[in-house]
Length: 407
Image (cartoon, rainbow, N blue to C red):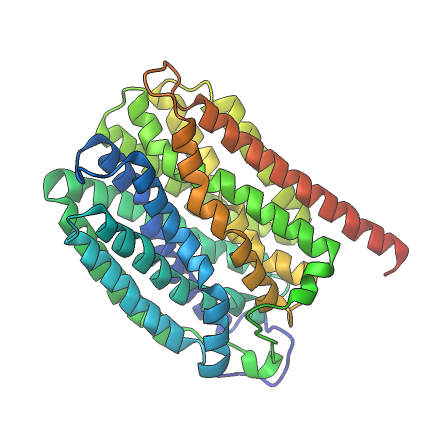
């Protein structure tokens, strides 16, 4: 329901309730999903499914992200016809079904469908309708609001990393999945009741796809950044706990490394939002994307000790997910508020492939038995981020030329 006939974002008011709601959505969807690194490390070091290969487990984790993005155009159309809450409620059912059925899986194909596809669909149906909401409520504080919201995934990842790791070690894998479902879905029901849009005031197009946008250079540059940065993001997010084991750290230490990465996410994302509002959204996104790539090559690549890995986990956690903090505001910068959902749908579609196959590539690049088994994957991750930052550099130059030309 629209709360105002004025199309200008109020920069506050009920918008702050929506910030809390979006924070919680990120916490109990992406936060829970980002703890998959703990499951991946467990799957890789234990013969849970005898017929499975490491590639299977990598693909399942990638499906959490890619399936969420794959359904984005359909979710956008459903939200346009029936409102924001209906697809979110459908997503709630899919998410619960995914976690519960995963807890009973005995074959790897069952895990593909449950912990991969169903959870991915559930996240997409809940998360995608929430993305345009904060941009409708905020203008000058838009990146700050999105940064606070995105920090929810870090808090959720921190909570679920410790919780899942402890439950897996002390109770069972099945109960880690079931308790994740119970906690996440209980909180998300409350959140769905609280969130509100301003669609009636703004009248967004809400197209599943607007192919005309693909004729624009600035749109293509933004989508290139999205594609390349996701190659690095998934590789780093999912590989870090198993990398910790590869340098002979304990299961508990690997869990802590994953948790510290999520702590860095919770701390860093609001700061990214503040910096973006103050210094420019394209500029900050580009610089942090580049810095994350450099950190992978300079800190992660030579790291062989627990202390250095903890430092890298915190630093990279603060910036590795710059895409999720800035994609909404950047889409507004490039295409305007009315075209926000159309460009977001294109962004989600573009990252389906990298989120599906990035960790598969990383595990293929591993050299088991080597002193540095993850070296090739680490280089791949760093270069992906650096190349992504180059796309934003060209976008910044393009926007600057338009300003100078008075366009």
